[in-house]
Image (cartoon, rainbow, N blue to C red; front, side, top):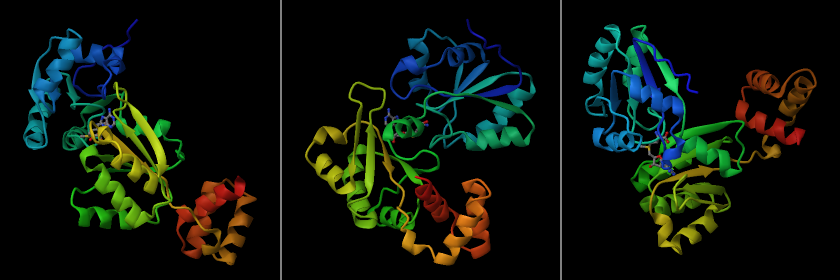
Length: 283
Ligand code: SAM
């Protein structure tokens, strides 16, 4: 039984499948059927999804180039009591997809915005990567030009959290080459390609080995992919003894997150590094 009573004056942010149509939730289907209009990144693309589920409803385009103009129109519809759904071509809108300006505009106007959660390539990839998920950072797309890509990766060299990137497989060899150059060939990388689709491939190895794997199989350079890079390892020798002493004392009294935040504040050091150290100590 479906429990998707639609509310008036509400903007629904609806996640759609990233490949397998079976991942469209019943609630998403109900909302897409019942709203007054569906704002789509690409109306033709969304029409195919709607047809697959025999959903007949009005659509309007809302993409990067007309979002500012559309936000006024959509806010006006919501104020009239209409309900609107926002979808992107695949996955969760706003996640490397249009919608941020619209949602911010609606929220600033006190209009109600409600999520209809579902597929997101970044989260799907992270859930199978086998890398720490307690803390991670989503970096979106890396720059397409080598120089800019290398400098972004260089800036992330000391990031201790797991890092999630979207990338185009045709660029994958260049990207992984740059990972080897900037973060080292030993850094562990997971490639999650064509998730939920026929040729789904999840391959994890050191950056150097992943590069060899990609160079040896042109099929891996097709479709869509998420790259996940393990965070930088903290070398305990890099943390001064007096900081470790404070941390140990605080850890005996409180939870690691709080202990690390206080120790970092006292000594003016990075909280992330202390947290990694605290976790390693616990293990
Ligand atoms: N909003 C989407 C989401 O929630 O995942 C992402 C949109 S972004 C424009 C598209 C990128 O997401 C692709 O270039 C790829 O990096 C990733 N992606 C989308 N579908 C994927 C899939 N089935 N397998 C692997 N990566 C995918």
